[in-house]
Length: 247
Image 1 (cartoon, rainbow, N blue to C red):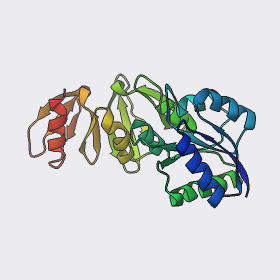
Image 2: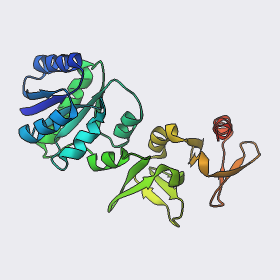
Image 3: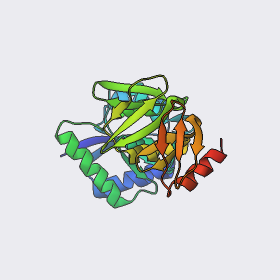
């Protein structure tokens, strides 16, 4: 099928390289506009209403997420492009969206475009964009996808996460019951690990700020601020000790 696309990136070489790849490998994808910054990109998306949007993340003082917030709910299928593997990419991966690392590998571009065209053909758009936008809220807030909507939480209020097969229980300070999220704990580890959380066991990911004390043992236990004892595996004990030293 044919589709339209926009490229929004503040690097001229990156824009030119992507445009050349698309012209060579995907002539059915018509690039109808290119922009070098977020304000112009917002106007271009609203004017052109593309099917696919190739979007850089860091563009000067603004980001690709600022653009998505400005055009919501008018969402094309978004394929992020970035040279940085950091917090933003972890959020994208957490929400199962497409991203390409620069320099773009042609075969990875092919896979992303094929997925986009397939979803467009089935009447779908990009994955969980509302959740992603919540995830990227400033002041260390994230949005967790629930069965009936989103739970927007501050990272400092999350005490720990427990694995329940392919689900994760998220325990929050001041709340009696955990939020049950249909994501494995490994994905929370990828996303929250750099934010002060430490994996102490295959079943437990804890916020080091909410550890009340450590009880010695083969692996030992941690006593959390809500009084709950969580087992520390022998394998994860060194990582926990290192994290506690940073408190």
